Length: 375
Ligand code: NAD
Image 1 (cartoon, rainbow, N blue to C red):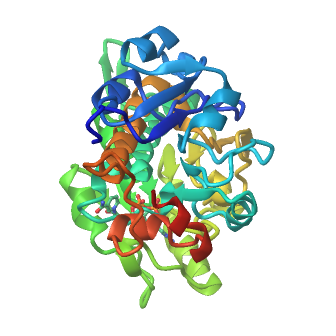
Image 2 (cartoon, protein in one colour):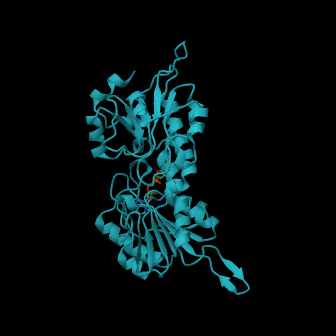
Image 3 (spheres, rainbow, N blue to C red):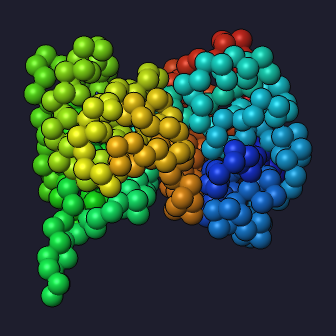
């Protein structure tokens, strides 16, 4: 850091503007832990929907101001959602937000000479684990999906033994046993359901079983299970059809399905069609967390409740916002870890393309954009 204690980097935190988005990308506690290394400008009201007041941000050492000043003065801007196209960034601004797989956004930001560090591009390595917003938010979504599903169900998840009779525990199944699916299984188990999990990745079996749930094997031979980076491979249309048919009988015996199967950057695999829904018991519930990328069920409507053959199909696209305080604490912890990594000991930013983390974040930027930015 310079001798006169001047902090070279100014970081701006913006209020989210997407309707229903209640989270904030950094909490006062995160800023308090970084404030010796950077100057923080926070847009007025940025944390109010998540339970963090402007006064708390000021106590943590940030200056609370309007959006125009944040955009004019911050070198690096932090938010959760991709920015609206009308936001007026200064050329040369660095932006940390979601939207890292959106090519249209990437070219728009390039036109504005904004360097976008899209959070989806963080490598899923041990080193970057503390920065992994996809994992932290998927975990919250998996938990919230079970609560949403339980609210819509006509039956209880736990067993009830009463003088009037005994009620059997409900059967639930997570389709896709990644971060969200495993959290859904753990939550459903805590609520007393009989939990099951399915995934095309072989490694998922052990994880499902370690939670005390039953793994449903795919029974489709030669399936392209694993792909690079620990992600699932994409199945052909024929493989997906065969998968649907083998899953259908299992799904028909479940009361609650939490569908989380996704392939990064691709449409979600179709695992439930109308034929499968028709075979489920009326009053059963499907919570489709893949709704934003097309859904695992053909009948999913994003952010709507669609009731077909008596089955309630929910397609929530922003469940972490339902638990906005904790979701913001986890998101903020991830961003704090990233900022901690980006701010060098001399207070300048590390934007080294050869570094596995910053290199991945900068991967789709034009080479011409970055040299001037490495202050
Ligand atoms: P994701 O959100 O991309 O997908 C959710 C799940 O759906 C995955 O488990 C995937 O295998 C599964 N899936 C995809 N196609 C399917 C299909 N046709 N049928 C059934 N299931 C299907 O995944 P995620 O939760 O982000 O995790 C992906 C991988 O990354 C996992 O192996 C996870 O353990 C790993 N991971 C690693 C780190 C780390 O090392 N830092 C952090 C988080 C996750």
